[in-house]
Length: 208
Ligand SMILES: C[S@@+](CC[C@H](N)C(=O)[O-])C[C@H]1O[C@@H](n2cnc3c(N)ncnc32)[C@H](O)[C@@H]1O
Image 1 (cartoon, rainbow, N blue to C red):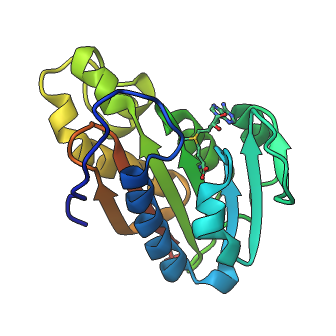
Image 2: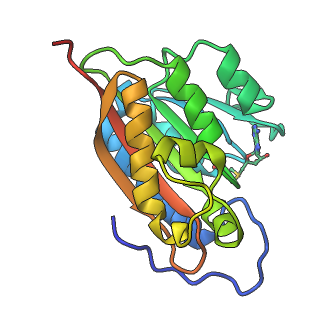
């Protein structure tokens, strides 16, 4: 996926879904839903927020459960709790899409999913990530979880420019841990702010 052109507001206000970012996020999720198939899509929306992605895409999935520190009301099924605790506690086997729409780094949550959700041969699963950590990496270090998964040092020059490569490497590692391999990988950013949107479709390796 190419770069999404989008004009960002001049002032740096942290909103859950700025319009330019929301368009990129929606496009990515539509691809994921098409690849997994709406009938097979059981979504765990770990940073569910006010439900913009649910309204735009995930309401078409066969199943949906959200999770957020805050309760937003409405009739979406949701855990109102820290996703780090919920992802470690519940049975993840039924979920085929994990949406990790974080403000910062989503990699700790992705590592928990990979550790607890083994794939059976031929099965397809998707991870959808919003990663705001390149912004921090410009000033300092790559998050430890991502550095470990991508096999790169935390303190190295120019890492924020290599974020797509790091992301693909990390997702390849996670896919292997789940007993799968990367079938599809998309990444998009919106140009003016170093936030990377990405998604991977992972297929369970056939036993040989
Ligand atoms: C970028 S917004 C998500 C927007 C959302 N995906 C939507 O479609 O509207 C990030 C959300 O993550 C929540 N959040 C942050 N850390 C969390 C955590 N550890 N566990 C659960 N939710 C968390 C915040 O409360 C916030 O609502």
